[in-house]
Length: 565
Image 1 (cartoon, rainbow, N blue to C red):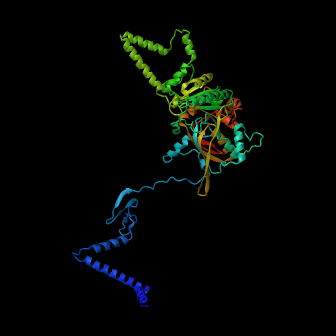
Image 2 (image 1 turned 180 degrees about the horizontal axis):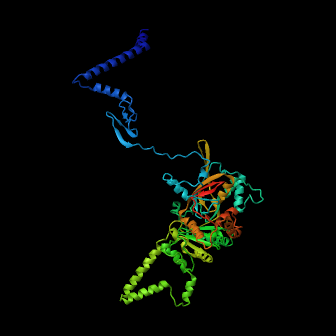
Image 3 (image 1 turned 90 degrees about the horizontal axis):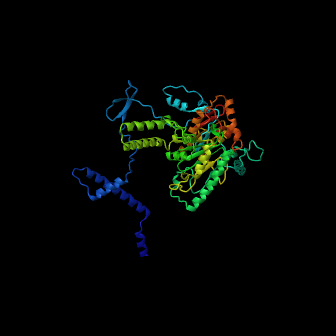
């Protein structure tokens, strides 16, 4: 029993433990008070225990926020009541006024609330004043037409924007099948008796297809300068097979163009791009080809092959646009032994005779002639790889140019990116060996101030007939819409040249709609079986005012028409 009592006496009861804790807290407070009093005495030095206690107390304090606004030393702002237009200045002790004029707050770029009259305001003539100078310049660049012009440059990205819902991109089985069937068979479901689906989604899906050859899934064949094509090596066996396939495909596509079963097609090589167009397209009575950009070597090769060409975009300061053309008649005339040489040759002979009469050495004459030839060559090469170097091959010369491309070694690059891969052929209709490609749309929806905005983004290759086809669909089913487009810079010269050729045509352009429509009958009738919709055929054959233009932004309102820039 005594052992159990001794063990029980060693344990501390809870009440006794609490009393001990309170006593310890009182002792600590008393020690801290004594240490503070000792610190105030002059000459008192802290020992190690006091230093550790102060350090623990400092660490126990809450860290002060360095970014908090201090209210202890609040500065007072002084404003002169007699000069209210001056900026108040904050000071700690004194008060003064700085004589600097107040500036308005910076404007914020925010998306404005939807205005139903916004499209109508585009067609009103703005009043030009000092404040609206920028708006006036923007309005001056915009043009308004009842029809949508054709842009012959290849598009790489497009965004459609509309306050109402756009065609759905999530297609049902019947919509996908009907759109695919209509495109492959070149059918217009609305104008033909068939059981195909004719919804907006089906018609929009039909506009997203095109034909291409060759198609190598692991390579990017447009644009051919893509970084993804670096390090790709094609073997000799593959090069031969690709060349044979491309030769057969190019021949078949050109025959479709001559028979007016294909309205146009593109040939995209590594260093140049060719646009072939059938008779009646772009106001030309015969089939023709546009080449951009060109070089002096390419032009010299065409001259050696006897192919005539012109340079419609060549600046007047650089000489006549037809100076670089090669005419067979001139060669035949010289071979026939005409007595009168060209005026340029007469001038050169006179200069040589004059220098010889002055006693100039023959070696010096050769040096002067070589220097003059180098200057002429440099002047001819000045516009290489630019839009001004565009070539127009028209009429019967187009057949010779086709043969030149079939046999030219420069068409298929042997070094660099896509070495051994033939040029890319792009067409809106089917041709031999072609592969059908499609664009993948992405839809978005934005809600602002209770108003829903709908948009569809398209990224990829878009032919010139893509925008007229979609615009015809949306104009029939929507009150208004807008589109923003991005073009391939290498193909902008096609629209510039077509526009200049239409403006400089010998036949005067009429302003009346009746005569403009009469001028399109020839082209539309010849291309009635080309596989495109009748409205699209009319747009590519239009020859009136604003038939062609470089399009970056397009706005449409049903009562007003198209506004574009």
